[in-house]
Amino acid sequence: MAETKSGERPHDPKFPEKFLEFMRSGWGPLDLDAAPLPQAAYTARRREALSAAFPGEVLIVPTGEEQRRSNDTFYPFRAGSDFVWLTGDQDPEGVLVLHPSGGGHEAVLYRRPRKGTDSDEFFRSAKYGELWIGRKHSLDETEVRLGLPCKDVEGLDEALKGADPARTRVLRGFDAALDARFPEGDAPEEGLTRDGELAAVLSELRLRKDSWEIEQLQDAVDITVRGFEDVARIIPATGSVSERLIEGVFRSRARLEGNGLGYDSIVGAGSHATTLHWITNDGATKTGELLLMDMGVENHHLYTADVTRTIPVDGRFTPLQKQVYDVVHASQQAGMDVIRPGTEFQEIHQTCMRVLAEGLSDLGILPGSVDEALDKDSLIYRRWTLHGFGHMLGLDVHDCAASRPEHYYKGAVQEDFVLTVEPGLYFQANDELVPEELRGVGIRIEDDVRVTADGCENLSAGLPRSSDEVETWLAEQREAGPRIAGAH
Image (tube, rainbow, N blue to C red):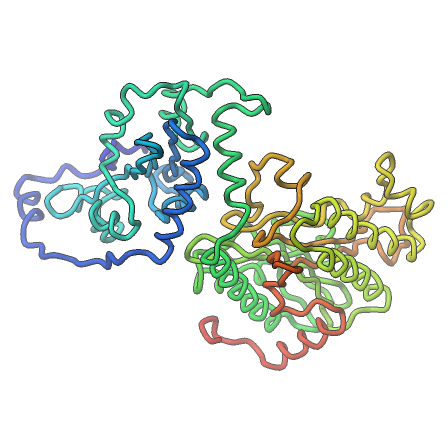
């Protein structure tokens, strides 16, 4: 049932005044840490960069609110990535406004204030009351933590009164009232709407990660590595285990050490590995088959890893499985080898794809020559590769997606970009153009790399990649045996 603005529900009891008076008294202070967050200095610089891109304009970046799952239950709230990048705040219902001031902007965070024991909301509201959801930071405490002026969101309308819609940009899709109040502006010369340009610039500013972000991504990757180790230790070489058990074991690590999963885990046993976004996870492992696992942890600051490994369930690749695996590994390594500042995204892509096409030719699958298959008017090799070499990574698993093409997939990588390199080969179970023994085989290897001054650094190097190393690693994990999730 719907809640009122205060968070009360129609079926909540109508308490007698005597009870209300009793609940309003006898409460002492409850302290909560309000020390400055370590990322506050970084978020300030990010706001300055955004301010410089839009002089004299009002910039509005909401984070959104909890979304209803069913009746009066809600999905866990996850703050908007651009909003978090600019503020460090992970609470719902916040709106960052950059008000033009002097030659730049004054940034103000409008958010819901804490309602303590001086308000009946404290014990009556299941959505906002601190007896229900715990102690929240006050506006003053939040201001200290974020290094950012904070005001009651109830004053937002007054603060925006008189703002010229033609000089106001809103990050769309997070607050319907703001979207309606400031209709999207006309498209600038490059074809985006004015508000689309705000989204694009924010994405492009986020392409290059600062040192604090690199630390967060490494943290997310390190937790992910431990999650893969947890999983490897419970997969039997003989017998069977369900994809959902694997999914659940990894999720336990994600919740224990991070915020949760960065995306729905893909756990593809056997032919399920050939479905790129297999998240049903209702199958089971089988001796002699391969298991593809595409999983990533989102850490406490909402940065996510994205790693894929394909392992032989019984511990050893068959000769044909190994041949295909080694092609994918060679493709990934070739892509990593060309990465350095200034390398075009398309060069990385073509490098990986050529190795895959050559491997398909060696397997006797590719009709015609490699060059013919790679020709832009053909691309028939993609029947078995399906996707590109990778994508940007950060606060989103597919990070910076609103960037304009010339800054992303039609542009070049730069130092401190973080991206995945994840080639794969997939032979569908019903593909009559491949030998029967290859049907239902899917292999992907995915790692998270940072572009350095003279190459790239593999952040997920804690997991082996070559076929021999994978076999050794799997044996070592199984010998170690299952562990308590918290022990590492």
